[in-house]
Image (cartoon, rainbow, N blue to C red; front, side, top):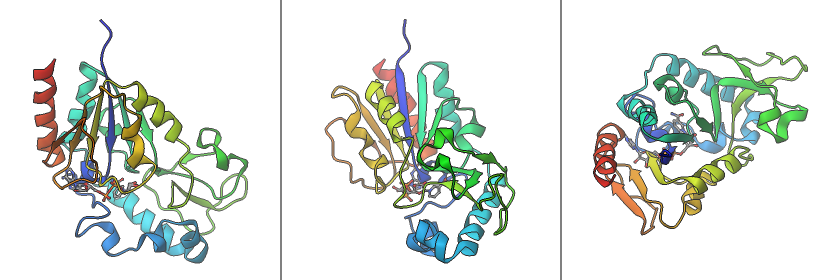
Length: 237
Ligand code: NAD
């Protein structure tokens, strides 16, 4: 029998129990950093050292955290389902938990690319380098002679992987959303592409802006929420 498909859309909340701050909760990263000061092309032009420093710190922090039970449970779904993880996160905790199909909508913290190049329009063709957890500084150049920048999508920049994500959500049998405020587009609009009969599960301890009659809101943190979700889908099979 063909295995059912599960598309998972994750946000900063799935990594919160690993110790990585979310953006918009109290104590979130943005409490100390305004998005327009850090995650925009304008910020890169005006304050390259500050932007590099911010991402260098995030990369270092990532080295010292581990995937939590929610990442592991999402990876474990692959035993019974055809799973694709669409993540807004730039961390690598889904990879480290063992998920095998991952679409990074907003880039990856452990990767860098030249700030200019022929590749800018299509991430797939871009000259992207894996640097692990090492810092980059002003003057670190790519082979094309251009300054290296974090391989992340800043506010106002295109989201090249959105087409792949839309295709995945359109074809899924179950849509699971974990730990996102659904405040950042186009990721926040992805649920609209789910088929009319596709159940949408949302795991998030807070109220949500998502209003859809297909939605089942599991109002819990990611780790316990994943256990509840597993029970629910096992009972409905
Ligand atoms: P967000 O900060 O806007 O929202 C976080 C959501 O997670 C909130 O709805 C909150 O209620 C929920 N949450 C908090 N703790 C939780 C927990 N333990 N379990 C489950 N849910 C929990 O983040 P977002 O929606 O992902 O969007 C903002 C942007 O933040 C994204 O573009 C993403 O790239 C970026 N971001 C990424 C990381 C990371 O890579 N780990 C960290 C911070 C921000």
